[in-house]
Length: 500
Image 1 (spheres, rainbow, N blue to C red):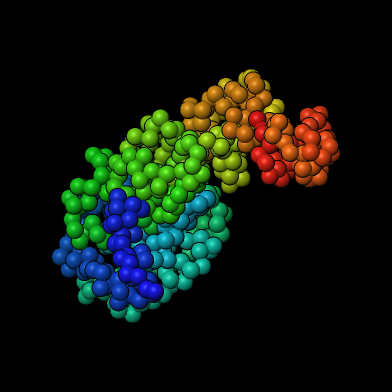
Image 2 (cartoon, rainbow, N blue to C red):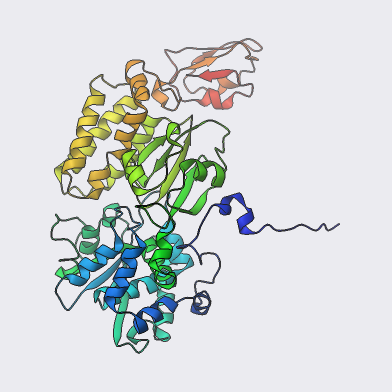
């Protein structure tokens, strides 16, 4: 028997009802390998408007009016960045797209590259016209083969229709676009390291000034924005800077795409207006904690971001509020954690990532993060010392102030933010030799409760014969022999084994 069922509209679903999609407006709605479908959704109308009715200064002014800030982490005003590049002397200039999305679990830019590559291309051509550049590079990591394939198709289609190349829209403006495949180094997300990689050198940052707008790729004035930033540009030019500025907060305009993940019911990409509260993202869009346990914290801004505790769930999500709370917007990673997450171990996990991705050029980042990681590892293994917390804070602040590039300057954030909000967990690890979340193996003890049925299953799986007891009798764990592997805990069918 067939029953009639109504398929809800996007706006009727909790996951979409609070979203406002500008950068993601075409993702999932068009075939990204057919330029006709992009054009049908107003594609390249902004470029036509710009090239036939606006001078470069007017384009930049529209972007300044919009209040668009870089979506790659720094949050620098995009219009000002374009203005600096335009004002730099020189006949040859470059527009560069940073598509080297390296945050673990983040795929905001990848989604646009794969789902709407023409939005990026159109945004880059407009930027080139505004600042007087005739050439652009898209720096994308080689681990994104589908994104690269669709970018190549999109570039070929745009060139075939005269939307890219020479004399676009018969305006006399020329712009060519190339793809540079990166090797996947996290540090190449830093703009000077990215340019070094395009030039064929090892991807390492250099001191600034001079800034890329003054002396960038091959010493020519260059502008770098990420994928999401460029994808917003066509809609800003079509609907006006004031329209974009009407969304968000006073200092953070428009929307932001986040990769919502972790211990949450609804995971995936969400694009929300700036200023939305964390609680709305996590509980109304994300559906709350998947395990049914208590919400503990959210890591925002990727591996260099910070942890926001449950007391700050009403925090508005904008650049300034997040910085004040010890976190950062970053590229938009948002990892939700429940009560079983150890915040000390979490800080160790993220620092392990940034430390291994350090290029090693400057001493504070190379040596400082290594020392911090050693201390955190000792603490999670039950060998922490009372002075460790002060040393971590001192090292973290020194690294932030003295590192050469953004990777080092932000690497201590997970440690400093967890020390700020979860210091009691550090104290428990060091003073009591306990992990309150029950996550650090070396600090756990397993006990068999009175409801043990004496089935002997735990005894059979114990690799070191630490469990004794007869059939149908309550068993016992010898704490001197136990290696805290947790095999008995996983094997027990009667929830008779506890840990703490």
